Image: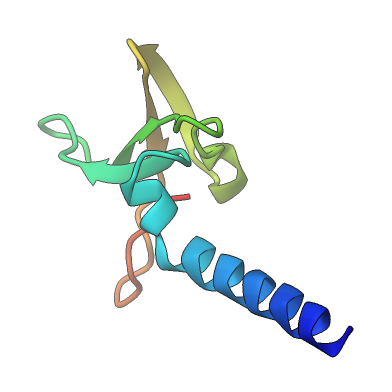
Length: 92
C-alpha cells in the first residue's frame, strides 16, 4: 500500500514538473503563444497563439489582450505593453 501511494505521488510530481516546464507546449501537445513583431507604427505587444494536439490555444483575453483575428490555425492578439522594467507576457 505504501509503494502504491509513493508511486502515485511520484507520478503527480512528475506531471506537475513537466506541465510547468513548457515541455508539453514545445512538443505541440498544448496550445502556446509567442510574441511577434508589431505592425509598423504600432506600439503594442502582439501574440500569435496556436492550439495544441490536446488543447485549445491559450485565451489571451484573460491577460487584457484583444483578439485581432484568426488566420489558418493561428489567432493574433493585441496586448497592452508591460510597464517599464517588467517582462513581456509569456505564453499560455
